[in-house]
Length: 113
Length: 113
Image (cartoon, rainbow over all chains, first blue to last red; front, side, top):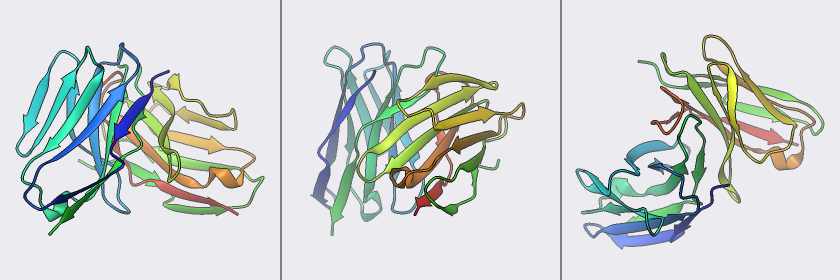
């Protein structure tokens, strides 16, 4: 089955700096890669996603890049703000008629004032 | 539009008992997936239902089962509860099956004593 590795497990950055979280996946058939943000005691919320036919996608301060050859995708957050502090999860889905996300272990992002 | 609703929010059960959790997806969504979230293992996929059929199943023992009704509402059942089943159980709904945006409910916090 699919395996998703996520690094780092904890990331501390100064407010206003950029943050990068990296994930690798094992199954080359995976074609959908969402990122979720989970604040303490709350549900995971989708912040951005990318499909395998696209190399990069941006939404304001958030961007995701995908390298299908290397089976690697990354989340980039620019101009970080205190409200960006949360746990971020990457995931991979095979799609193709069946759902089910395989998640990375999560990255605890801490924004230092 | 109402979000994904899970009931109950909290449950305390004794080892050996069974439990049923409920998930009402977003109106119009036909796919429901279930996940177990623990501090040690992170978010792990249990199973996915689409149009009352189980489309995909994660690596969990047969004590974990589920079903989906014609109105897309889903239930998850865990029999012969073990202490290790203590976790946050999340369901997510998607419009269609296969690599589409998944929206999570608030989860059911199950504690087995």
